[in-house]
Image (tube, rainbow, N blue to C red; front, side, top):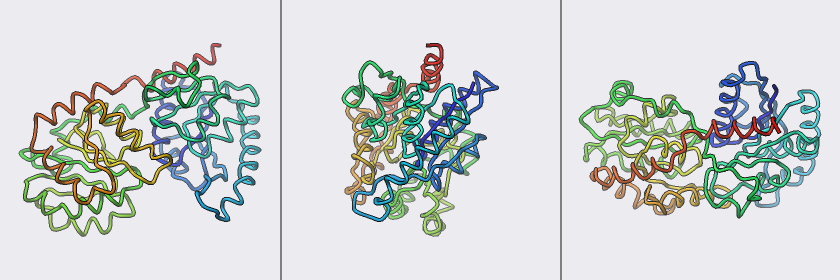
Length: 362
């Protein structure tokens, strides 16, 4: 059996794609899986790290202003569709999965025009442009939120949840405290800004370091590569207080296990992981995303009393006031934890691959 998985651009697209590939391979160890991404984007390194082959297309998104890059956009689309068509004719997949992002459009266009069974996985509560454009061409659309029929044909929708690394739920608190050099007597705050880091969260956290020390709270602060050198210097004098700046957290299972409260952006992957791990969270949606979809992701939780929302523009003055109040209130932490855990879908990856294999049977 052969499959192409296309898309990427951010960790929110890449990690679900890899989770789907892993589940396919678990069921069919001899299956051949080829990823198709956008040249120069993070999938070109992350996917090979996960053990899969990937081919890059020379495609980018449209900018919101007139730029030379926009003038080249039609040319890049034409070239990418032609290259995707050649890939499909050479590889001859039994089915194609699109996870969103620039590269999924040419691949799904080429696949559906040749009658190859195709499926979309939409991670967000507000559908991406590529997925909306391709919805009528594919056979199934797997979504993570209710109410997605406002974007997609209702008869193609399957509510599956988002594929998440299952190992994130397996961490031990005791192992986490030892791994990160934490004090078991103190409360722990985890700050994660997404795969590329988050300027607002990093600035607010740097300013709050004295307050965290005074409150006796310890910190795991994932800064992202760009912000790490400065954050490392800012946190250096607080090492004895267990306030740790980290460029990237490889063992997220242990980070979640250690945390009493999490501050996070509201990307689809982060929200799904919070649901599975059942962590009380303060969400600060990024304003720099298409259609403000992170705010819509966050509101899907806040509307059910499952998270706290602080806007990006108010984070500097409000984020750590609210976070420290939550850290001091174990009853509210427990309420948020129970409600957010109730929204988790631990079988999401299995359900999506069930749908994919169902297309092959038909």
